[in-house]
Image (cartoon, rainbow, N blue to C red; front, side):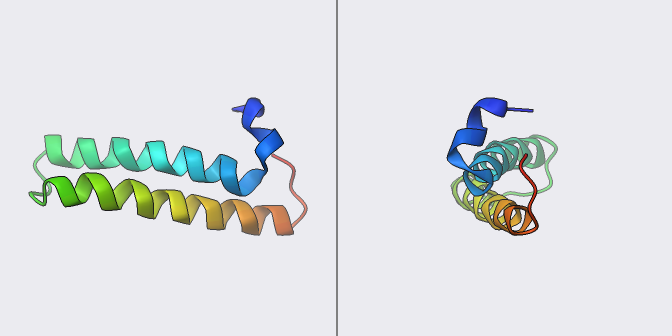
Length: 67
């Protein structure tokens, strides 16, 4: 999945995937009425998801995984 991002390394690949998943999660939670934080949700959630994805990719890379 997303093999074109493999050239940048797993932390970057997982960070990008996490960022877009965070945007989707913030949008869905706002749409479904789970939060009313507004703009702070749209800024902090994707950034936190990208950082978490990068850390997950780094840990996966340390274990010797390639994708």
